[in-house]
Image 1 (tube, helix red, strand yellow):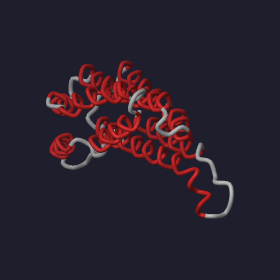
Image 2 (cartoon, helix red, strand yellow; image 1 turned 180 degrees about the vertical axis):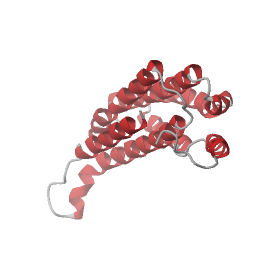
Image 3 (tube, one colour; image 1 turned 60 degrees about the vertical axis):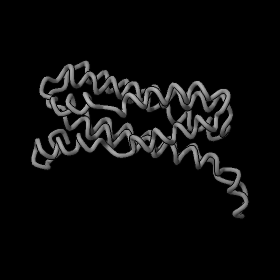
Image 4 (cartoon, one colour; image 1 turned 135 degrees about the vertical axis):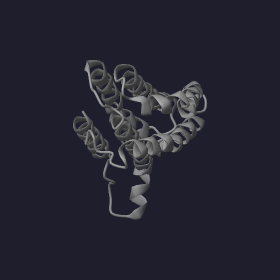
Length: 196
């Protein structure tokens, strides 16, 4: 499951970068027209990287995989696979209300599906006490949901504020949960390779 997911995430990054348009011309000034697309690509790349890192750590808490976990993982991969489309449209129409809203909806769908994947793991794998313990005190998850709702509500009226909030959430999730890392280190002596 981890290898398949890593492959899908790598393909998503590849598709996202392929949507970047090459500037017409040979001067530095010619690149100005594609800066919004480069910016949206950079934001999406960082999001995909953050999800990959957190997904990797989450899967290292799994000792047993069943159908519910597999389908939850596929839902997460489906959600994040919509990011290249949303990134391209958002990059071509930076700070326009509808593309900003759609970009946020894809990010929200991805966050919700990642939460459902973690929930499936703790309910289906009785040995996933490490993840269960981390999720019991998961303030980031609560904050994330609330901030996404505010950002989506503002997208049609204040798209720049929405993008700022999307960026804040990226910073919040950029690094995996330290409690999860410490728990994994303590549980297997620093060898986090059970599923790798």
